[in-house]
Length: 117
Image (tube, rainbow, N blue to C red; front, side, top):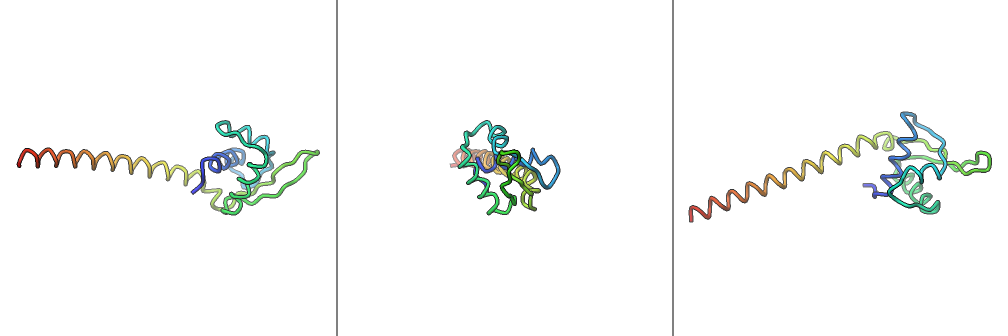
């Protein structure tokens, strides 16, 4: 499971990919796309390396007109990232509803038992 920062970076990469499997993107673009978090280029590099080790992406540093650029290829887990994210959200909602439902049932059973005894 990805951390919040890794998930934000992966969402930005997935958005930049726009249905393609490979893309060229600068670290500044990724940092700007992740507005909620403040990244330094060193921490972004660590996150990109972590995503690569988790087999979400495959990347290479390149140089475009003197600017550092990531050449990123989405792997199978990277292509299914959006589906996995939606599945996690659905699972969380299911668990919350189940917890509330069980709390209501246990309250009703408690009230019924208190009325009987």
